[in-house]
Image 1 (cartoon, rainbow, N blue to C red):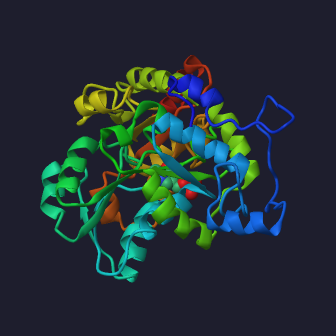
Image 2 (image 1 turned 135 degrees about the vertical axis):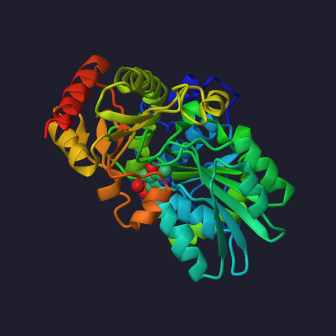
Length: 396
Ligand SMILES: *Cc1c(COP(=O)(O)O)cnc(C)c1O
């Protein structure tokens, strides 16, 4: 890999591989296989493929490799493996290294499908899981055991935007001999370097900020070369959740503008949080960049900004929240995030509908809670749209 550059330069140039044509923009190598000059070359490549040698697109592809190298350079990870979706990345990072009898400690506040894997699938294969309140280091310390293989968390968490002390959790986990896996989607690779904070493995759903324009599903797992090549790659290349070369190309284009987009979206999010926190229809504004956020100081140390996501309780429960959603004219009702379009979600009736009301309450997901992913529209238009919709929420 090339010498170290600043993040914005890396996002434009990192990992680029040019063919003999010297194309400016990355080529899409839309091929599933690769031809060998002779039988001896094929034999050699199956023993050990060189850095520019590929065998089959389920194992690797030049366009996919460019994406993996660019995001790995940004994260200062030794290596990475791209996947067909964020969930394929989560699944692979866990299943590639766990076996029956292992113990896992996980934060309770997880993205719905991550919770399904950790709570339902892992125990089915004999892995014992202990859940903790991720913001309480004492609970992590009390939960790890000599047989704890890994700990899993998301920070910032979905949808209530809790911030977990990654360095603190890493210290506890490493003392017990456990690996730390962080799903870094909400914080974004621009604002939070989980590997530098002590995580061993970082996962992204590239579907979110990395694409950032609502086009493709994708994911990536980043870690040491040893982990990626010896533990993760065998699992992924034989189970088949490979990223398509076309997706990798779209995501390379996404990475070029990732830093600019995330910074604009975070600045807008901070402005919106400030502008709407005192609106009479907002019972509680949750934004890690606001001083009254419970982990505000930690967010300031661990992340560069408060991030691109907000959550707030609309006073008046589900009916009022629905009046708010239905009155929005610019902000879209959907469940993606990190998009150029601002998107609002009502977790209790959509992403977290599956949970029992007590489970939702334990996670702080009330009937009035809405999650807002702030996009790239003019922030003044967003404040106006959100304010008029909050006004409408109060009219019964
Ligand atoms: C979206 C998301 C995922 C899953 O990613 P997909 O690309 O939808 O499979 C995992 N974790 C978090 C925190 C997410 O937001």
